[in-house]
Length: 85
Image (cartoon, rainbow, N blue to C red; front, side):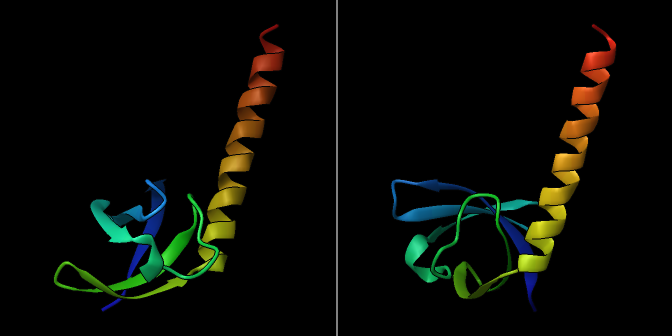
């Protein structure tokens, strides 16, 4: 079964910390096991066998959707901040 995961951070250039599923379970995986070009903030479709990552692919649609949602929230905060001046 596949889960959604976000790349929370990349540490030491060798490992990535993923937040997996709705519970955002933290999993540390070798960066080499992830698709080429993966970056922090990208969403993935992942499958684990126990603790081992066996499949991962970038979910471009989810990554773009979340990016747009965050940009809209930031814009709303900027507007609210300007009104208070």
